[in-house]
Image 1 (cartoon, rainbow, N blue to C red):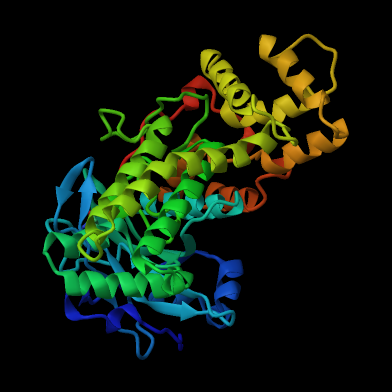
Image 2 (cartoon, protein in one colour):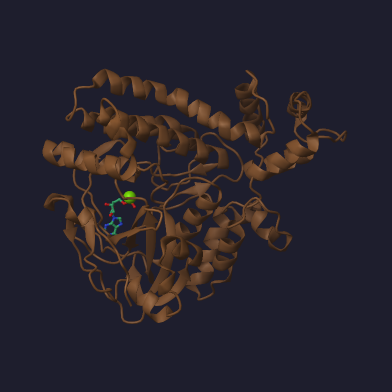
Length: 473
Ligand code: AMP
Ligand code: MG
């Protein structure tokens, strides 16, 4: 089987990456293949031969000309700088360039040790693979920038964590794997030549328009900051908590990267944390905007080695929260049916969230329910807030049926709920992929009522609730 991949990153100087040999497994089997994405990438010719797909996307078989690499990076983890991280369990097979000229990394995750593995085994078990598969595809269908899932393969071998667990490999598609931590890697070594090369590469790959500006590096930083603001606003609007917003998990492209302990809110809570290792709530739901800003400040520090533009960087950083606020309002207004802008909108949105928190209401379901309350005279479901909101919505020059339809077009019925992901994983470990497949199917159309799958829309009952998530190692 042939797969025509470029690898522009492999052409960068030596210190940027290291050659890796993905581990081979004797009897890999295909758990999932994303046909639609394969078509978008022009990789659909691979489909059909499931045995060969399982071999390629577990690392057991290597199409001619493919020379996998692991990428070097550093990162601030929970605020502490680690000068050497890198792809410890991932192998970049290469890059697809689509007919439209867009370039995407094809990366195996969980394919074995690399020179950056430190003490780890470079492997992954089935749980994190299925989790990232479901979450990243759901995120895409919710309209939020993210890496994607092309394939999941069971290796047929055991991975040892606390117990023996079934091993698996995930194939991730990303518009690149450049992170804030990649810049920190070279900055920490004082290697300004490499940092310049990296910045030029990042600009060419993601923000080529920056090249024609007076200060391309500043323009680059501004674009990265804008994309982060848009990204975090998107997360907040769907109730997503990334969980481990370290600088090595902050993509320069503005895509959601790394779904370790990531989770969606059920009942609304500003301070919600799922990750088992986030004891201080550093990456709590409502902290994501200031953390993104903090991560951007780390990026700015590296770029200062290349250009003397401290005040420009500071201005961009201080404008970040303003830009974020406008992205956030742009996402939240239609969720509440606020079609014409009003100065009081931010307060109204804040009041709504406070109401949800005070009454421990489900974030996702409450928006759908609010849409049904638009023209009712029944007693209020959402207390005093409801009347105020209805007045605001009715005062607009818009038909109420139209407002409701617009609310429903941006408020998902289905999100990848934690307890369903856990269920899908537990069943898959026992050899049953039904829930995993159902979830992917349902979440491909998150805004559409699918009554036959109502159980996936429902909030967890107390006994189903998942309160903690774990890093995907
Ligand atoms: P993450 O928290 O998933 O973003 O991973 C942080 C760092 O730990 C990255 O450098 C990973 O490559 C590395 N890592 C995570 N799991 C493993 C593993 N099983 N083996 C080797 N390295 C790992
Ligand atoms: Mg990571």
